[in-house]
Length: 467
Image (tube, rainbow, N blue to C red; front, side, top):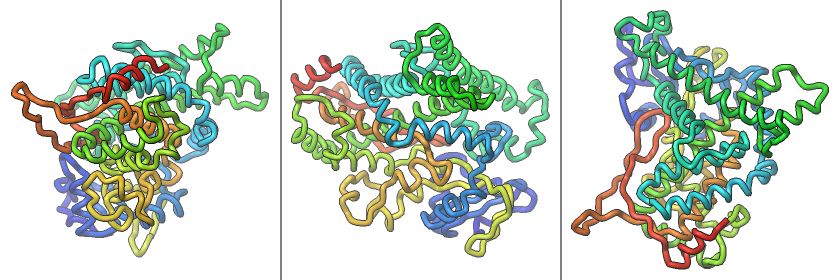
């Protein structure tokens, strides 16, 4: 496939962007087309820049592009094997649309606790969003209620997610391009990656083992909480045909759900809050729709999703406006392939370029840099959840149905009872806010100052008395 011209020996090493990678990939997409190829010291990489090409590779040819890439720093996320398929089946059985109804009460409970926290200390909105997302997925997955502050499980999960962010960003570690470097002793100069890897392995082991061990202990003592782990362990305990490693699959799946579920909701809602500061007209229109349906009689519930189409459009636009994983998660070609005349060698790392796909005017209408929920009322505009926001093909996020409900609950609830606006300095002037996002595998809104005030005394009462 076409791409920037490589240099002798090092190939395209110097072409890899150091930050805000998606902007470079968007420029390459315009210059080279729907499939862009680079070679970095012998490592083949390709970026998919059109929905049609993404469908061809990740859907029609999914058996060849469902492997995750293996790197020294992000070792074997899980290749597409029978072992992986069993993990996927375990996830799907508990998180298909009908199954997620079992988690509604937990989602509502933690959304309402989030509102109370925001009321008490709105300036700590980032910490409150993190706590709400972590507490929700911890209870759904393990049946564990986390501590109000400094929870051990949440603290460790955040360490793991920071490690994944650093390890999964292409070009962050030379050892991923020169695998022989993994044999360099940790004490040698330049081997900081080895020391990081030791710490990261411990974080990952703790996230895998500690909450699972606690959930299992409660089951053994006859005091299990209803959750993913307890229900799945009970099923294999009652099944005479269960496989010896079924428990390990449940443990691994639970850790994946915990890690993935924590990040998706919190960073999406944080981007929503930024959008409300920058686009107050959108906030006002969404509030008018909620007021017409609910007034201040009650807070939103999952059953209100269909009755609040503009609020749902706000949720979709938040997913589209800035993708959480703007360059996508790496897939790997299992075998040599030829597509549209392009040769893709076995082992090529292939990225679904989500940021570019979600800004395609053919799918999302004009002015895709703007936050504009109105676009979803135009015939033919696509749902971003089916266009890369949750991934592609057989590797698409299994928890997307539950995630969408959590995102709706938090966004609709915040809109109903709070007014979000720019903060003011000591002299009363508005503090400027820009749409800035971090670089890396995960890209989140840079911390910004804002004001969150209850819309009325009645709204404040609704927050404090909700259960």
